[in-house]
Image 1 (cartoon, rainbow, N blue to C red):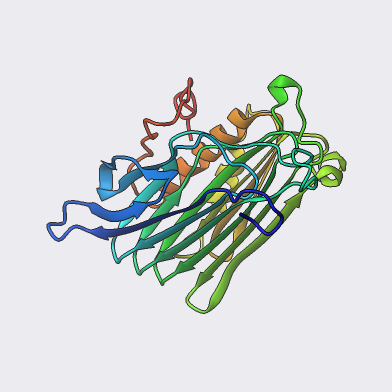
Image 2 (image 1 turned 90 degrees about the horizontal axis):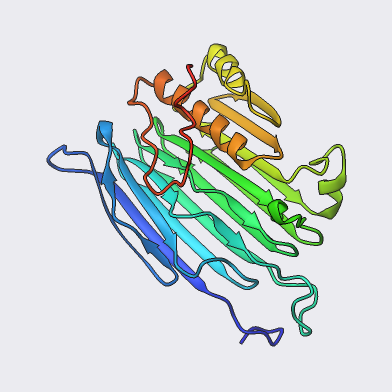
Length: 296
C-alpha cells in the first residue's frame, strides 16, 4: 500500500549484459527480468550485432508503476534493444478520489558501455492517454570509443479518437557522460501550457528525439544529409551537430513521419560508420518500409 492509501503499481526490473563471444561469433547476452517485463528471444544480425526485444506483458502503465532497466555492454559488444509493442500510459489524473491529482508512472534506464561497444536503443512509440502522467530518466555512461544511439517517439493523447493529453504530462531526462566529461544533458517537460503554446508543441500531438553520442566528431555533411532525409514527411524537423554526434527533433501530427525520419537517420549513421544497413526488427508493426522508397 502506498503512503497516499492507493495500491502500489508494478515495481519491475530488467537487466542485461552483452559481451563479445569467445568464439568471435558475434554478441551474446545474459540477463533477466521481473514481471511484467520479459526479454524475448534474441536474434543475431549482420556485423555481429544482437537484437533483443523487451516485452511489457501488462499491456500498459498506470499511476504508480515504476520500471527499471539496466544495460551493460562489455568491450566489443554490439546490440539493438527495442520493445515488442508501443507502450501505453493510461490516464491517472482525476481517476481516484484518494489521489485526484493522479500518480506518475516512471521508467529508469541506466546503460553502461565499455570501450569499443555499440548500442542502439530504439523502442517503439509511447502513447499517453488523456490525463496520463509519465516520467522517464535515462543515464548513459560511455567509455572511449563507445557509441550510443537512442530514439523515442511520443504521442500525447489518442488523437485518432479525438483525445488530447489534456491535464496529463510527460517528462524526460537524458544524461550522457563519456568518462568524467558531460557529453549531452537534455531535460524536457510537456504539459497543458506547453502543448498549446506556439513556442512549445503548438497543438501538435507528436514529439520525437534522436540522439547519437558518437565515438568521434561527425562531419557537417552527415548533418546536411540527415536534414535532407526529412523530405516528403509532414511535421517540423530539425537536426544539429554535437561535439561528438548529432541530435534530431520532431514535432508534428504523425508518429509514422517521425519513425520514418529517424529510421533514415539511423541508416545514414550506419552508412557513415561503414556498418551493415539496418535490419528492421520483426516485432515492429510497420505496414510500410521506411527505407524502401528512399535513397540516401
